Length: 276
Image (cartoon, rainbow, N blue to C red; front, side):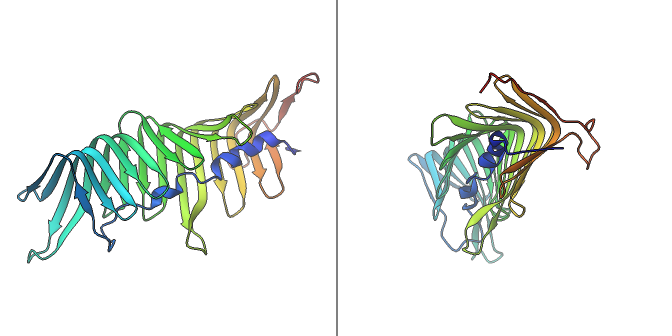
């Protein structure tokens, strides 16, 4: 193994330790005491036999700080046996869909928001989430488990974060998954984040690749495994596993993953004296 105080590895932690998607946990809920209001510029149809409400043209469903908007919204509801209870349990949105919470906006073509499960699924073209300090995109879908605090971006998922000094840092993978938990102050904070499959981390000066990356807040460590390669100009570092200790700012590169046995046990560095 090789221990190094090498700043480029810390970009993995810098990308995944930020406020990635945590605003999205504030969403619509069938258990909320706040009313769910549906409005539209066109029409509102009440299909009693199907137990549906259909809002057309610039439709909006809003509850507290959270909302779902689209050209068409279809709200599915249920009634009690006596007809006294009226409860919306799912909202489907189509065309120019926008999911908003207190601090973020997600856009796409279609959304299914199951209020019982607290799960919002966004699909379609140009999937994008804009939150403070970062933008997240995906080609397949976004998934939000509101109550559990889980967020998935699937299909060439990409996180872009501007740097205060200029330029951007990016994290790309087949799937990016975050788990959020409530701290002592009642705030949703990042507990863990996984980057799964074809992981590529790019900064203005470095490119880091691997098969899998994870950050755990309990240990304050980030780990990258699976043919790890770090490139800065012509300089290259290679190993099977890299661990970044964010408390000590020490990075360790291993030639073999002890958990899987992958790798030949050797690390490799090719450094050019005249390079930066």
